Amino acid sequence: MVVIGGGNTAVEEALFLTNFAKTVRLIHRRDELRAEKVIQERLFNHDKISVLWNHIVTHINGQENPKLVTAIEVQDTLDGTCSTINCDGVFVAIGHTLASELVIDQVETRLGGYVVTQPGSTQTSVRGVFAAGDLVDSVYRQAVTSAGMGCMAALDAEKIFG
Image 1: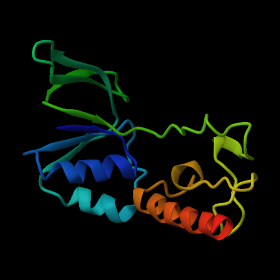
Image 2: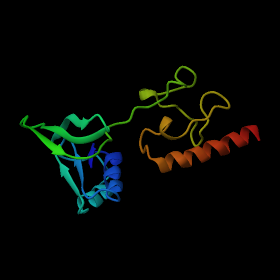
Image 3: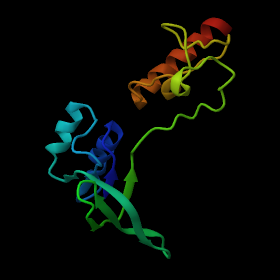
Image 4: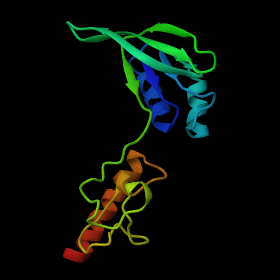
């Protein structure tokens, strides 16, 4: 298995995949990860995971019938050399695109399209409209914080609508 990325999502995905794969290779375009240090340590100490630094994936190879991945082609970002890595799965964890189209121009937003909420609340600039999770959180962007904020939104709505 191959995971592409260098943030928390990529490292967590690589760690999770060790439950199913014999080996996991994390491919990152730079020479250091952006993931939190505590999960980097878990990654580096895991015997099933190896990291390929300073590489980008240029192509995913596979077959059509049945559809499956057979290999990836990578390029070294430092010297431009290319190589092929055999694998049977690729997980891309290289970013986060906010899906706020539904509320743009409906509620107050800030840079990046994140919804502004009242301090200590999930209430938006429109009474009765609440926002939570990745729509609001530009810092942590974790499932556990999204779940907690979802609970907050439900409680905030109950306060207003009883």
